Length: 340
Image (cartoon, rainbow, N blue to C red; front, side):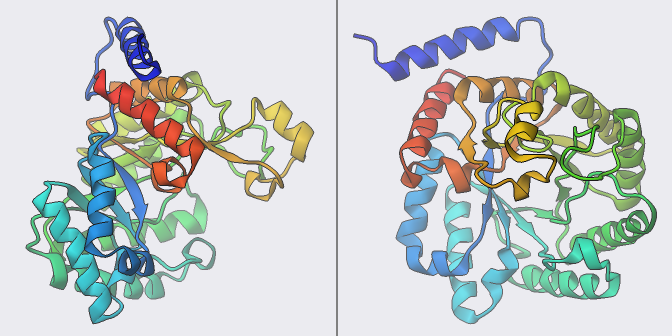
């Protein structure tokens, strides 16, 4: 008898081959690794053996990169720094590349205090440089100030913040510097009174900003407002726009293919259930791991434009230790990646 996993892997392999016949791919449609919110307390509880187990689980689905956010919190004490170095050493032994963030203040996007933000991030950059400048696992920096398109005062703030942080990162440790912008699809302002940029405007804005800032890698988030009703047809214009922006500005485009999404069949159904409110304020709206058939479509699109693919959502929703839904996703994806 053919097992469910064997059947699924074979079916997905055949479907992928048919769907991508004649298409140009810049990378394989698989995930290199997850965004990981680093928690010093969790790392202390896990110890080296816990991290070894986690990296084993990730290696089984061929992850070879760890994109670490909140890393500066791991340098708060000598013990914390030792635990973070243990993780970095494990990654080096396993040839897992690590992207390390500069940190940010929790309200940076609302208070726009440039000098305070630069002081905070610069202190983090110096400390990370002192600890890990020569570490074999240190692959790249990440600036976690994520934006869409900003205008007016916000644009002026970003035009100063990004280039300064990029310069200070490269001065501290000469590694690539990354950023992970998003796009929105809500033209009719269901989720708030947000200004919308057409893909052509999005391309112009990011071409200028990447050139000004000196980013090496742009990891484009693929899910708009994170809903299960978002299609590749909706995403494609923004991938095309960012691909052209990176090409013009001399940066590399990676895809951030999210592996978790809000479960809702349409925007109209969202309004019927929750009203015209921001999705973060919709009571009862739930997240789910992206079903494998849908994930395959998302990976297909990203692979057309991206040199590599990372993901947000794995740590929070897709690790097998999290429960039945997560275990199903993990086994489905493990079957999928074996067919690649």
